[in-house]
Amino acid sequence: MTFKVTLQPSGRGFEVARDEAVLPAAIRQGIGLPYGCRDGACGSCKSRLLEGRVIHGAHQLKALSAQEEADGLILTCCATPQTDLVIEARTVPGAGEFAVQKMPCRVGTIARPAPDVVILTLQLPANVVLKYHAGQYVEFILRDGARRSYSMANAPHRAAEGLELHLRHMPGGKFTDHVFGAMKEKEILRLEGPFGSFYLREDSDAPIVLLASGTGFAPIKAIVEHMQHKGIARDTVLYWGCRSKADLYLHDWALEAAAAMPNLRYIPVLSEPKPEDRWDGRTGFVHQAVMADLPDLSGHQVYACGAPVMVDAAQRDFTARCGLPAEQFYADSFVSEADKHAAA
Ligand SMILES: Cc1cc2nc3c(=O)[nH]c(=O)nc-3n(C[C@H](O)[C@H](O)[C@H](O)COP(=O)(O)OP(=O)(O)OC[C@H]3O[C@@H](n4cnc5c(N)ncnc54)[C@H](O)[C@@H]3O)c2cc1C
Ligand code: FES
Image 1: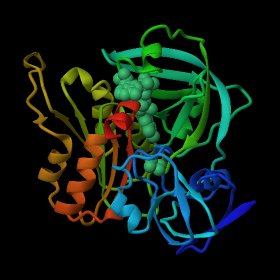
Image 2: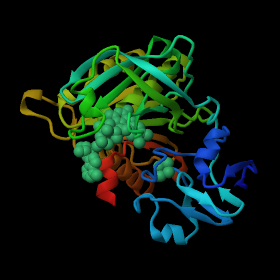
Image 3: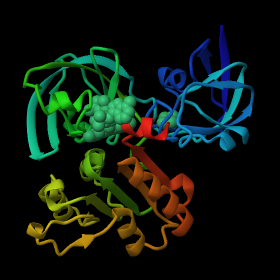
C-alpha cells in the first residue's frame, strides 16, 4: 500500500510506501525537498501540511515544537503518512539530480592540521563516480548500523582526487574516537551519499555571506572552490569563527582563495584568542561580526554551517534583526548525539 504526496506550489507528486517517512521516499525518487540531518534534529525539513494526516516519529522539540505541530507544521524526515497528503514545501533546484549511492571507500591520507581536527582523504572504487553539489555530505555506515555525516570539503570537479572530509574530535564519540585513535591509512569504510540541500543557489545574483564555525568550514571550502571553478563572481564574504588561531586550520588556504578571487573577502573571527596568538583581527561570536558589518541583510543569501548553537543564533538574529528573508538562509547544522540528548 502506498500514499500519494503532492507538493505545493509546484504540484509535483510522488508515492510513499507504507510505514515510510515522506523525506526518504522523496530522496529515493529524486524529488527536491529541503533537509539537513534526516533525523528530526535540525528543523531544515520543516514544511506545512495542507491536507491529510501524518504520525511523527521521535524528533527534537527544538526542530518542531508542540505549538508548531498544532499549527500544521511537520518534519518530513520523520512524518509517516496515514492518508494521501498535500504539503507546502520549498522545492530545491538540483536536488535529486545525483543518485544516492552506497559504496566502500579506502582511507587515503590522515592529516592533523589542528589538535582536534583531522583532514581525511578517501579513495572510491575505480568504477564509482560520486557526483554531488558542493556543500553536500556523505554518511559513514558504522558496523552497528549507526550513521555519521560529514560534508565534502572539496568541490565535485576535484572528487576524482579523492573525497576530502574535515572531522572534529568529539571525545567519547563513537566514530571520531576511532578516527583520532586507531584509524590507519588503507582502512576500508562504508559510506552512502550524496545527501543534503545545503549548496549554492546559482539562479540568484544576490551577494553571499558564507558563515562557518569550526569544521563547518568544510562545505564552505567546497562552495568556494566550486565558485572559483565556475567563475561565479557574486560578491561574497566568508566569515570563519573559531576559538583560537590554531583552530583556523586552513587559514592560509582561505587567505589564498581571497587573494585569488576578487569577489571574495575572508574575515576570520576568534572567540577566545590566546595571548600567544598575537591576534589583532576580529573577536567575539562570528555571527555577531556579520551583523556588525552587514546590519541590512535584506538583499543577501546566507549559507551557514557548523555548530548548532551558531547556526540557530544566526538564523534567529539575521532574520529578526537584519531583515534577511527567512527563505534566503541556508544551513547545515552539525547536530551530534550530544545535541540530540541535550535537547531531549
Ligand atoms: C548534515 C551533517 C553534516 C555534518 N558534517 C560534519 C563535518 O563535515 N565535520 C564534522 O566534524 N562533523 C560533521 N557533522 C557531525 C558528525 O556527523 C558527528 O555528529 C560528529 O562527528 C560526532 O560523531 P561521533 O560518532 O564521534 O560522536 P557521537 O557518538 O555522535 O557522540 C558525540 C558526542 O556526544 C556524546 N554522547 C554520545 N551519546 C550521548 C548521549 N546518549 N547523551 C549525551 N551525550 C552523548 C559523546 O560522548 C560525544 O562527546 C555533521 C552532522 C550533520 C548532521
Ligand atoms: S529535522 Fe528533518 S532533516 Fe533535520
